Structure formats: C-alpha cells, structure tokens
Amino acid sequence: MDLASVIHYLAFVPAILVAITGHEFAHARVALWFGDTTAFDEGRVTLNPLAHLDPIGTFGMLFLGFGWGKPVPVNTHRLRHPRADLLVSAAGPGANLLAAILFALPLRMPPLMDLLYQFDLGHGAVLLFSTIVHFNLVLAFFNLLPLYPLDGSHVVQNLLPLNAALRFNAFSHRYGQFILLGVILSGYVLPVSIASLLLGPPLDFVEALLLDSSGSR
Image (cartoon, rainbow, N blue to C red; front, side, top):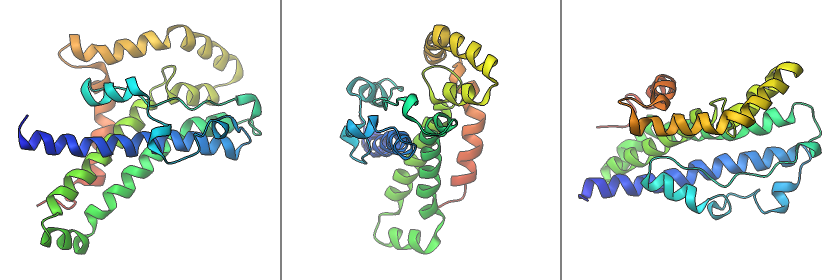
C-alpha cells in the first residue's frame, strides 16, 4: 500500500465514525423525544462511537465496501405521536445530510482554508472534510432506499395510506432483505452495480453542490 492509499484510508476511518455515530444517535435521540426510552436504556443516546459500531458491519465498511452500524432499538408502541416513527426513521439520513453540509462549510471559507494552507494543513483538511461529506451522503441516500430493513422502507410505509402500508410492510418484510442483498452484490457480478445506478445521480448532484470549487488547490 503506497503513501497516498494510506492517507486516504486514514481519512476514511473518521468519516465512518462521524457518519455512523451521527446516524444512530439521531435515531435514538428522536425516539427519546417522542417518549420511547428503549435506546436510552441501552446507552444509545450518546455520541460515543463505540456505542453504535457493529463489529461485522464496521469490518465490512473498511474492507468490503459496504456495512452497517448497530441498529437502534425502537419500540413504536411507546411513541407518543402517530407520525413519530416516520420522524425517527428519517432522523438518521437527515443527520447524515446535516453532517455533510456542516463539514462542507469550512471548505467554502477562503480565510480559513488560506490559514490551513499556510501551515501545510490545507490538503489534509480538504481530503478529510470531503471524505466525511462523501461518506455521509452515501449513508444518507443508501438508507433512503425503500428496502427493508433500511430507513427508507419505514419512511415509505409511514407515508402510504393504511391498506397500502400494510401490503407494503408485508412485501417488504418478506422480500426486502433479499432485494437489498441483490442490490449490494450486483456490483460484484455485473459491469455496473444497481446501487450505483440508483444512488449515483442524486449523490453526484448533491456532492457537487457542496464541494465543487470548495477549498481545493
């Protein structure tokens, strides 16, 4: 592994920690706001990454290109609002989008970037912040796919009329995991992965809005 690969890998690790921690913390915190203490009781309303990392999922992110955090337990019967499950589900991707915006902001502050470059920190800052932005966007858009057990399936279910939601829920729980696995594995057997086809356009568009002409030299 050459030096450039090591540097990129070192930027990838904090990006994973920021994205997963923010994602799972947001689920847990919003659930607590609406009255469900399940995640709180298990110590998940915290910004400590160790509370949210799944060993196998983290290994997959680092070495296989896909993975997951430790799912936040939510008892929907404890939620005090009929739309609370929708907000809890959307909170994770929403937190990732917010993190992407926040970490892109320093790259659009010329005085700050000029100062970092004066201390030979500019290139490192661009690499680190842009990697964090990219990974947060990937996690946000991937989790919005309407496939069980991703957040998107819960979001869609909560937006549908009752009868349609029940049918979608039954189909999603029966077939969603298999479809999701096929989407993930398609990149290993097809010239272009289904995930790239679905996520590439919105990901590239938002990432360009946040990062184009920001901080790089």
